[in-house]
Length: 166
Length: 201
Image (cartoon, rainbow over all chains, first blue to last red; front, side):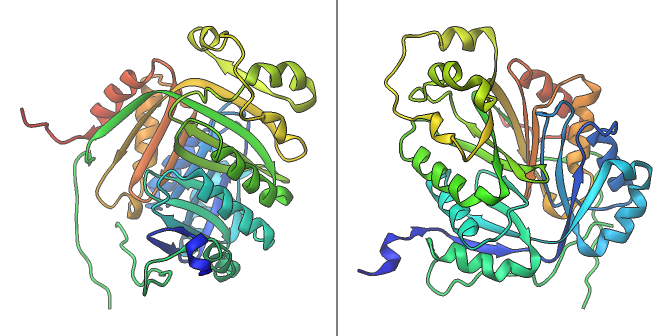
């Protein structure tokens, strides 16, 4: 039997450039509002956010581009005790997920089977984005491709240019 | 080659702000070394429950695991929480956060156990169900490339005392999850802070 028949069809995969994952530590005494303000004051884009209030105040993660790390460290100096940074991080986006929990479960399972870390996750109505070790993004693609089928001639694409707001 | 373009807007534009009410937020903790098992549990769960996924998101909850959230379009009728809570409340740290309406709804006669949350045993912990909750979300031009969008949204809600249960941003989308009854206040707050397109009448 054609193995592609048992795979779940998706539209495509997108890989990020190298990122740094910033975590606001729970109950640190600083708010997410303050963290966002400090980053925005230094014109640093946060590309993915996953925060919740299950520990009381909003806490969680946001990703920035690796080239913004030094600037972010300076920007976040006033709340340095409240944040930590994880790198190198890469994001893998799968689209569309079509709200298929089955697909998401199988993707997590495949990543786990290959010993790939999942640092965070955020979905929109169309895409599911997972963060993992940037050095192992290709391994993550291989794991995901065991369970999804891509359109003919589609290859996971990496960004070739960036739009940056000044 | 670098290309520069200048774009400035006095108020951040959106393509429109939308809301959804009557949603259900399910939260659980998944150890990093059980990601595969957690994925398999989600796969089994997906094939047997009757609600639809709206969002899924997670973040590290401890050095050892992820806090995983499933935002569903309604409380899954086929999940029998009462039994699980009664049986496993202490052992598995199950917590339920609900409004009076939801508690009344869940006081219905027990349904057949189509999905056993006890299957969490040994895989996940810290199960919480927050039901109902509300979602306000919006997209805008190049949000994924711009700074200050999420911060502007969170600040606008904080200024109007709108509590947030979660914030999720990816691509050009911003999702704000809040307790029941807060979506209208959130829409008002965001309507003041962001520019939304006029609807033709």
